[in-house]
Amino acid sequence: MHVFIYEWATGGGLVEEPGPLPASLVREGAAMIGALAGDFGRIPGCQVVAFRDPRIVQLALGSCEMVEVLSRFAHDEEIEQRAAAADATILIAPEFDGILLKLARRVIAAGGKLLSPSPDFIRIAADKHRTCETLRMAGVPTPDGRVLVVHVPPRLPGT
Image (cartoon, rainbow, N blue to C red; front, side, top):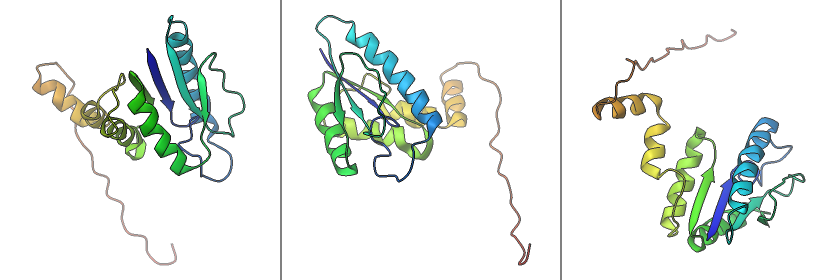
């Protein structure tokens, strides 16, 4: 079994962004991919591959094959190639800016098989109100919710 595990913050999602990587995203991402790579690495015959941003020098992934990502182009090409070649792909990425949804769509378009949630699931789950409405329509009891729109008055010159 060949598993591709991709984590956005440690795996090159910010490869061309200048300066230091966001510490909290890197710490949380490293913990998640470390746990998954460790678990899959203990399965006899399981080959695990993951990406690493070269700025992340301490990324403990056991016997996992590490692919260094040096550019955005290489990042995008490698995701498609690795996902297409793997028996299963697991994606770990933030929900903001549609990052996780875009990655899931890219994996599917490349012919990859997601072990993590599908693009349709991600699209619904990323919107908490839509999630409640979807669950309610399926007969699952959910709390009432409301979408609030905040009105920000225009700034006056000199304020």
